[in-house]
Length: 347
Image (cartoon, rainbow, N blue to C red; front, side, top):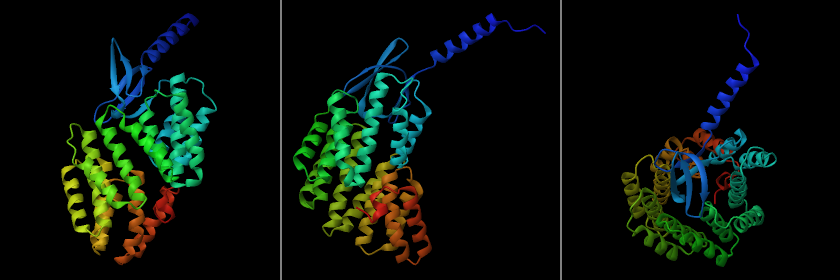
């Protein structure tokens, strides 16, 4: 048997290296479409440009659901996965681990990592106000250093929510207005919904209802815009329940459920939650359990909404004579979403 020469080994290694380099890509995951793979060449607040062979493609930022960088470590992928599943503390630990060893990450990937860390802090602060100042500092610092970043509008969303939680209405409004400056209608709609959420949290149900209604009345031309419209309709339903009109709220929730594809999990889950709220107000606990249970069984992929459903089930199961199931819901809530405000008594 002939021995393999060093030259042959080196030649094979060169081929393998060449092949692996050829397939090393950035990946942009697009809502409702297949992923775009190639090399990210540049970006602005509005678009990300990716080179795919001889073609350069512009991806609108409002359609991007996630983004993976060429050469990124497994810890970064796991961090995103942990954050998506609702374990934000674990994700922040993994982001920090990547931050401590940036070998192989491009400058753009490093900047994105800085944002992901700031976002994780913001998400923790939303359920723990004691962490708000730290999160705001991280977000404001990122915005100053990366004023034209593709995460810009999402950043404004978190800033607005945190400022609103602190009672700084002026800065919250300024952040939501920045979202409204986006060239995408769904972002503009989302900003108005967030402003309405802030009004509702402050107890101004009438003004919140008017803002939700304004968005609910808008015409839509994309799935993203339709999702925002339905979110506004569900905000309107929540207001109706608070104002003693739960039957009207059930009607809206049923309409959204019937008109929305099951693949739109966030909208479907929110619709079942608002239906459950209205049924509780109508003193129909068994029907409310069925509504909340739909979220538990079908839409557990939406962490914050799933946590809310488990919170309600932990009470309602007892009311319908299923104390063991109430205990199970409470245990899963605390186990799966320990940082959620729902695990600590609700909003």
